[in-house]
Length: 386
Image 1 (cartoon, rainbow, N blue to C red):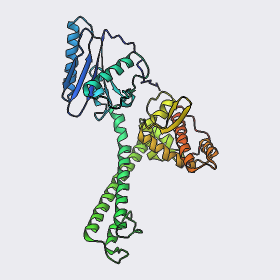
Image 2 (image 1 turned 180 degrees about the horizontal axis):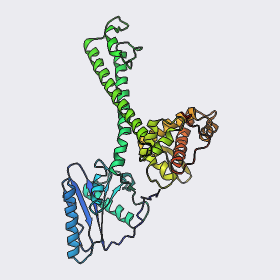
Image 3 (image 1 turned 180 degrees about the vertical axis):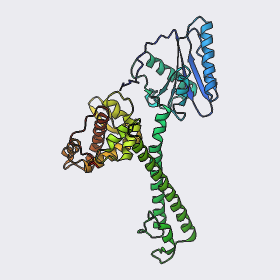
Image 4 (image 1 turned 120 degrees about the vertical axis):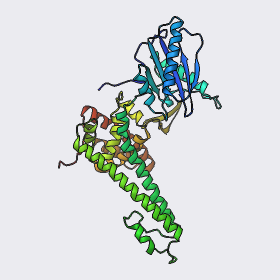
């Protein structure tokens, strides 16, 4: 599998024959700035959010460059990742335009306390970063890998499942808080027939629930049941896909992870589609994308850690920290679990929390090696064969 280093361009940059354009995207308008060979001015044009209008503008600038005596052999368009996603980059590439999506956090900005920020200034900042990237200079900016429609669609079930689980927790907590206001603490709102038992429920004052409160709880329970049904549909559909097409796409990778004791299908699905199926360069890139790297603050003899950088994928970070705690329970004899136990025996709880992040980082790298090279983490226990 070919690894891409998206922190710099590996293609020679001929500025005399390359037209570069950057786009500042917003909901109502797009601001396009260009660097056109042969033109002394740097054109700037505001458009509506219309891809065809953008393509027409690029062709017009190309025609102006030709009239000025320059031959355009390459057109590069770049914009920051945002709500518009990657569809525009795919659309431009299908029409012969070299399109890139910039990681917003990779753009260096001024550290002035109150710096001016406008769309015009932002396009200038993007242009300087993109030109440095095209010249092959590292650290100017990083480009995001542009997924296909199928790859984007494959992430939706897991992300929807995560959203539904969060909504389920929110509704359950809200119902518990409502009952506690009336002194009721032992009633299990998650029971299937909880709605039927509300009528006979009594508070410590031997009073039934007020009518409006009871109606609200019944509506919440109806929402809870709907969310449960939707979660079940997603889980069953995924299992059916794995059963009927075990070798399709990323399914072999997912099944490899699901064989490890303590790694469920849901966690395996998240890891595969969010991080492990990406063509990341090396283990440092894997840890950085997972948001599990530190943020040191060093000046002279002073050095301190400010905690996690949190610059990567938040879903991967949360999932890996949860998996690291489960790993200590289900994989006690593994080399990673023993590494953690050796360093935290007798330590304070704060130290254990710090080391669990280190374990999560090591575990993510070990799983990445497992699905890409087949190297099984030392001492890992698999599910018994059925």
